[in-house]
Length: 467
Image (cartoon, rainbow, N blue to C red):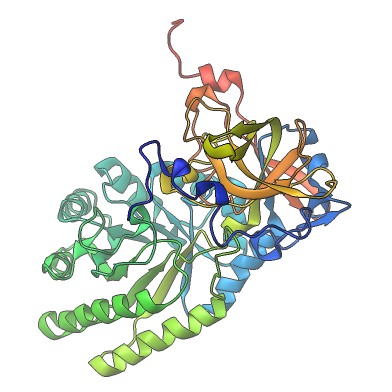
């Protein structure tokens, strides 16, 4: 029987009880360590990150604000670099990118994945080695492709026959050469949200193995005089917690690679397995360790290559949100605490904060779950099941659907939401003409603004009404 409600999931039967996995805490002030950056802890109820109290961090920049733990970011980058030492590890620029983060990525020995001209601009401004940049995207324009080639981008992930034709034209006209990978869809249904599953057949990315489009794209790329074909690229989705989906995808992609070798006489030197590894947003999430993922994925590829009688290609992975996601939290100020009486005597407590869907659209977009904690003081004990909501003119402007928060929560308190490093600032908007929040990096007791808060001048800079 459906549990949906005409007014939305928030009103479905049982919604007031919260999800089954959410348990009332014994201590409302306690942190669940694996949800937070590695340096996060509480001192007398006050949240500290990077050797600083969160109230002190936001005192000069106000709220909402993203707090980025540099040491945690670098630790996670190194964990993937070391676990996948025989691979090229590509940091996902789309998760969160600024010039400072691009420099951290390069300093930790990772490659960088971009998927727009803007992301490429940030990377180049940061001095990132273009030869270590991969360029994704399902609809790259001629202008974008020309710039990528001129910049010396290390590989372009070709997503369609139209894009392949554009590259053939550009290389013929310019004399430049394009190093490419062909993105293929392996027909794998990843166990994730529909909008972030990217290897099944009915979606916009890649060329189908099943239909033969992937093989034909390889044939055309191999025959094109200005194109250097590096290999095949597969990506099954995002927020993936185990290697089972990669096993199916690798088997199908490597079978295509064997066919290419047999029928075209071409040995492709590289293969990208994608990634999109998951992080813990709530206590129900159990992310895999990078070392375990590396062992399992390497064994999968080696086993399939032995069975097919082909040499193992050099591998690449894309951890996705798994590096920056847990390294950042978002800090808000509580504005109102409103117990709402509902039918049957039930009460829902709405905690309104000074941000919302303009700084974290994922709850509204993906029905994503988040956690939350009181960050600015100890509580007096006791907790209440609450819903943290934003200040925008949308009933669906929800930050945290369900969380046990201190019963004495009041206006002026700071609350912090972990796991907001990926896709929150990068998908932030000016909805209701909100100003996008700053990103403050913290490390060893020092805070520095790496992305400043937008101003009203920024907001009006593109408004030409007075011209």
